[in-house]
Amino acid sequence: MKFIFGPVASRRFGMSLGVDLSPDKKRCNFDCIYCELEPAKPVTVYDNPPQVDEIFNEVKEAVELYNFDVLTITSNGEPTLYPYIDELIEKLKTLNKKTLILSNSSTIDNPKIQEALKKFDIVKLSLDAVTPSVFKKIDRPAKGIDINNVISGMKEFRKKYNGELIIEILVVKGINDKVDEFKKINEVLKEIKPDRVDISTIDRPPAYNVEGVSTERLFELSKNIENQNIFIPTRQKLKFQIENLTKEELLNTLKKRPFTKNDIENIFDEHTQRIFNDLLKENLIEEIWVGGVKFYKALI
Image (cartoon, rainbow, N blue to C red):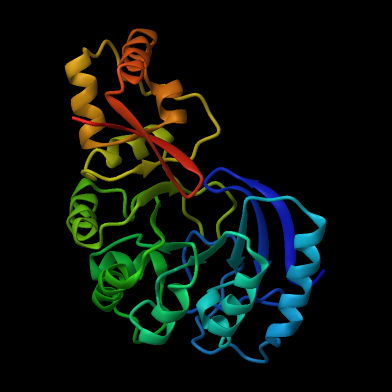
């Protein structure tokens, strides 16, 4: 198949069947320093786009062949550059599968793009930085893309979107890994009001000579993001631990920041896990599912 890949096990969304809207080459209006694709000059127009039916027919065949949780629209670049994205999602909805799009957010201030993305069950938008100089350094956008317009677009989209909105921050060592930048991102997130915030780092060979940060550092930076469902994908057992919390301390922690099942197993010590289980039995903690990830939040 030309456009289909997977299904693959995603740490963030369960079993995912991918749909690559640009399988032949990179088409992106960013040239992110952490991208796994080769460096390329940003473009703003999708040349020689495939027809909707060509993509849809492949997806329909794959849906009949495979079991998966979510149909993920992505691209070797930015999927919203595909000029028929609205028509495509209309047809994909007829397959009765949960749909997800992974976007770099660059076009979210475009009302036509907002209308198309409204039709997805889950929308994941990137927000690596909110300071203009940091944004340009990490995402290397095409001329004319302004981070303030992107942020305004996110806020407007949130007002009209009823699905699950996920914001992803990818952290690069020495670029956007400063507490001050995360505090500024926190203020923006308060206005956007996403359903989940993913904080990740480089885990594949990047386009440029840059490095990721440790998972422990991601957790430290996440402390500056208040009252959000935060997901930090990791494949490793963490050295970072939360120890010997009382019931009151744990409830206060889970009220300020819901934790995932993986967080609880990885970073709570045995004593705190016992307290957590007691609170769960007492119905003082509720389960919340966002984008296929289970969170626990204090009810009081």
